[in-house]
Length: 422
Image (cartoon, rainbow, N blue to C red; front, top):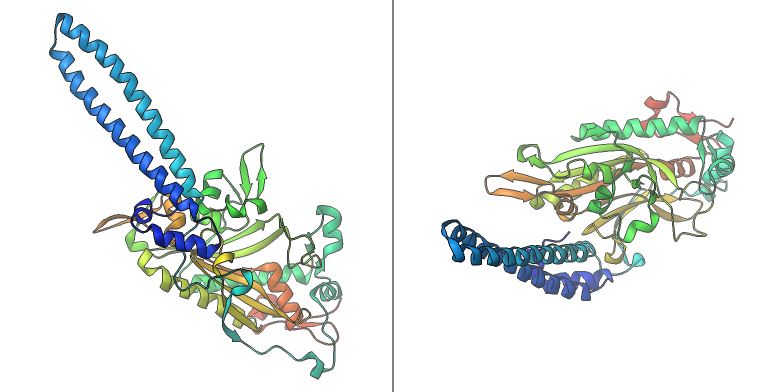
């Protein structure tokens, strides 16, 4: 949620941000109008309350007919106060609901445009030339079958489309990736967390996942809870309505959880294999810090993601995501895309977002220093999303016979150097 005081003082900046995102500019004016009505209603309520307090004192010292008249006035004034309070509450909620529709203020350095208007910041590693090696690369589905690692047919039989089993070395590879990710996070000052994957509406709304992203959220209506699409949600909400000790900032968590996404609007996209699925496991980095430190913290999260991909010995590129593809909470986002040989393209495997104080303001997460109580900034970054990392490892490290070489960083966790055909 954007600070209403900032919006009052900088409406043109907020309008420009909305325009850059391709979202409603008129919403800014609706909020300003609602805010004026809210302040007028509050002023009216406070004026009547003050009159009521003065009248109450007068009643105490009055006698006879004067007291009867004052009591009659007091009753009439009490009705006005009650009505004014109801109006104040109504307009406050109307203003809040409008504010919840407003996306975060764009970083001035974020590229403007749609999904295809990203800026490539760097490319790291050289894709293999399989032609020179004398064989046509297999895709991850075929490799997964040869290794006894991925079973999408039984996944579909049991759970429907975009479902799968990881079996044998596929399951072992997940455990290795998670263990390596957690060890890496510990070295970088993160505390490991296994969070709940069922959360209440306040957690989903506070992190911004009931707006633009709502169509991809699974809701259990009977219990009014949601399955999270990322552990960003429970990690952010973990400190909802709390004041964090300033000396503990930045406060960093590495959350391991299953994630659930409806994948609405992706009909016909990535229907083969495990690139786009309804359920997957992930290790997510999350950081609470001072707002003035958020940009530097964002660069650290990106570097840790780059370090992970480098350790997996996979070619990748880093892109600066364009404004129209950021999501409502992020003011800037970097994606890392791994090279997928059979697609001849880079595909997203991790991302990191700076959400400034947007989520924390909605979740009421603050810190206190010598200058008073302030809102924290929140940032998130995927360290490893298991299915897509398995895709990248299988396809980039495959051999002509269908076996797959294991990245050196993972070999200690697996006790082998290669996955052999079963």
